[in-house]
Structure formats: structure tokens, C-alpha cells
Image 1 (tube, rainbow, N blue to C red):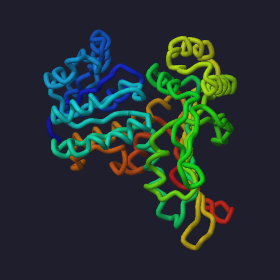
Image 2 (image 1 turned 135 degrees about the vertical axis):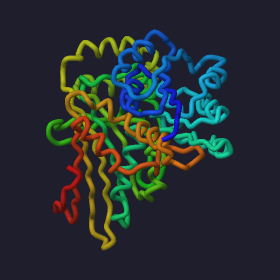
Image 3 (image 1 turned 45 degrees about the vertical axis):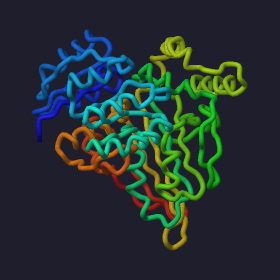
Length: 385
């Protein structure tokens, strides 16, 4: 393990603070905990100082500042982890500054345009000898690892159906909410019936059973990179679908109603109301549960032409759900520190780890993952418990 400096942008935010917690045990590493508010970064350093093996330093840094590139050069990180969303309206100025600095870059972007578009920097990153990874989060990082686990048993894949259902009591950051609201009721590309059409954010509601203890949860359309990346990657014949939802039915269906208002042109941009909407949702913060889950289903035909379906489920209780979106970034960062990723270039978060590499982290927080095969409409075997 070589001496490295890891800069976490948005280090005291919802995801940044969890990443810092899980990297603080790295010896011979300096964690630069960065954000616009230096006092909050200093408080974070004080909280972690007693247990950290890594050296910690608070940094005042604003990704929108005109001298951001100069700030980056001054702190000279080897790896930058960008958690300062929302990514829906961002440019690649942070990633481009990392290329100029000659440091690796990881982000937790959840916007399909941003994640897929990172490849525009591929040649520049290769020339600089650095790795830029976008979407190091639940999607497409973890979701692709799940499909990679099973897809070679299929001769034909007709459908990949991905769903995420957080608990109502789970902590949520303002940037995440603002990003979701930015496309509520707005169109984005969707892969259906073997071709690209259009879906609308937070529309087409349905209920899906996540099993015990979550039960049935409401879902609706969400814009993520998987829908753009998976059809070609896995040669999907019919559909790639991603939906997410709110645990409390009236809040979820309220979002669907908001999407209709936007679709009709009555409210063009719900993101302008992020703070009052978050304040209103806070009235219901004690309702619901702290249990969330994720479900990935792949269906098609095996090599004998028989119907085949694979279903993977993840359940996170006791409020640990917000750790899940950080795991891909943690894995990539730790691999870079250990010199286990020789790749260079710019890419979505694909082909950098396996599903098995998540399992120790699942066990750390008591997250339960299981999978099940179904063939010829009869239940197959269960694994991954």
C-alpha cells in the first residue's frame, strides 16, 4: 500500500460522511475532508480523529468556485471522490480538473446523462494515466454486479427489472431530493419492446413485493444510467426498467400527482421547491420504517430454450440503507489505494468489482442479500443468504 491522499468532496453530506467512515481505517492514507463549510469539515475531523488510522485534514473547497482547479492543485490529491450532487445539472469541470491534476476520480452520480457522458473524457484520462469512474453507487455499480453474476446462464435476456425501495425513516440528503425533483414529470429515454422510447419521471406507478420485512411497496419511473447501458451490454431483447419509490403510499402517490402536474405544464420544475418539500416530508419522518430494499430480476431463456428467471433481493434494516449507495465508491477507492486497478480512462462504474466483493460489507451492517432461480415456472435453488 502506497502513501495516498484522498479528497472527499461533500465529506460531511449524507453519503460523503459514510464514505469517510469506511476509509478512515486505511494506514498511510491522508483523508482530505472537504466542503464549502470549513467548520463542519473540522467537526467531522474531530469526530473521526479518535479511531482513524488515516491522517485527517479539513479542507474548505467549493466545486463551483472559479479557482477550483487551483484549489485542487494546491491540495494535490491522488484520488477525488465527488459526492456533491445533484449531478443532473452539473458539467464535468471536477472530473476535467482531476485529469489536469493527474489524479483519479470517482463520483456517485445518479443521472443517466452524466454517468454515460463521462466517456467523453476517456482519451484525456488515458493520456493522463488516470481512471475516472462515474456512477459508483447502487446503480449502475451494484446493479451491474448483480446482473454480471447471472447473465451467462441465459441464452436470451428479455427483461432486466431493477427496483429500490428505501424506508421512510432513512436519512436523505437535499442533493438527492433535488435531483429526483428535477425530472419529476419530465421525459427521459426508456428501453421498451426492444427499442428506445420515452418514459416520464415518477409516473407509471405500480406495487412490487419485496418479501419480508418490506412487503409490497409503491414504485415509479426514475432516470438512471442502467436503462442506457444495459440493453447493449447484456443484449436485452425487450425491456430494461428501473423504478424507485417512497414507503408511505400517500407520499408516493403525491409524487405521482406532482409528476402529472409537471407533465401538464402546470409546474415546470419541482426542484425549485426542494427545501419546502423536504420540510413538509419531515412532518412524516416518524412514520413508516427504517427498512429498505433493492430487487433485481432478470428473465429470459436458457440455452435449451426454456423459460428462466433470476431474482436477487437485498434487505437493509435498522437505518443502514444509506450505506448501500456508498459501497461501489468505497470498493473502487480501496482498490486504487491497494494498486489493484491498473485501468485508465473514463467510464461508468462497470467491470471494476464483483458481487462477492460486496458481501463482507453487507455482513458488516447486517444487510441480507439472497437470490433465487426459477425455471419452467418451478422454483430452483437459493443462494447468497
